[in-house]
Image (cartoon, rainbow over all chains, first blue to last red; front, side):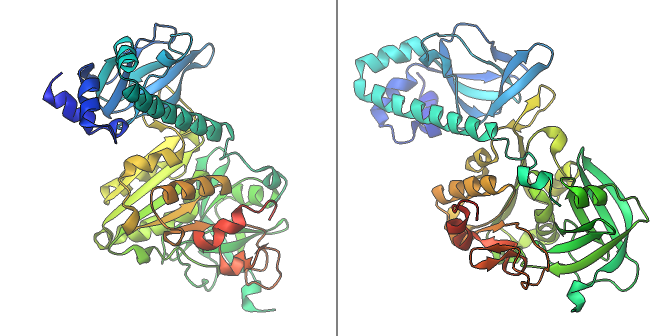
Length: 160
Length: 272
């Protein structure tokens, strides 16, 4: 861990409210990385063993659909957490991720963070709350998009 | 019959396709022009032989002609969308309340448009960008179904050059899209919102406005700092026929622009 890694973590939305000790412990497992635009970060079906806290840039989550090409499912940016599939029962990426703009991020090996959480349950609880909040936020956003808000309202279709 | 109920003849001088079902028409008066509209107000447009429909003004305030952006969703709007240059259109108005975007002088102006909801907001954006120095910051957040369904897309760069921060997001996109893919509410967090010093103007589908307002309230804004544009069955335009009643409001007169403080309790009433 470098001081700059700990400082970057402390400044990230995901770490808001964590104690200095918890930030230092988590930062010990973080690596500051830069990803050039266009570089694939992970692909659908690969082993999901890492996650990232995005500091700058933009990442597109995508999915290859036969006959329709590569569709973007969602984009993530500064302050976002990238990578939730390592939390699931099948540790495989459900979607791919590619840097849409140059990205700086903190990268974590999920096994190391899980081991840290087993050792420090309080930190584990706090991380779980944050990851759950991320998952809830993505779920709600996905549900809103399923509503297809900008479609022509049914009452307008035969109206003026 | 009062003058506000008599359509004045205008002619289509320009027609611009925005999306597959949305068109922007520029109208020039065939005789004496109607009074200039304020940002947020609407006109009643009459497609001769078909019917009349309320359409917000989408052009710059103070312009000699009228600009309207219309989505083809029914018989009248389809007739208007297919109007060719030279064709006559009847016009009444302007009607209703305005955004009063100048209330944000000295503060941040946050404009959030969803789908064709950006059309009624465009006059407020253009008015603000005429004097950007009077605002701390001007931010425009735009949501649409897909990149192909963005309206005024050719203007966003010009708005940025004029001093606004413009962020665009879509619900779905292919790999050729290099912008955001998310819900428009997710643009609020990264926008650097200062909840104490912001006036927010929102227009789009009602659910989108409600969710966006809730996001702004959760970020610390008050309902009085948020304005929304509501739409019901506007007909007379002067609050006499009652077709556009929305609780205690007659939206052709008391709206379309309404403080969220007044709108919030009404928006949650089913079928109102």
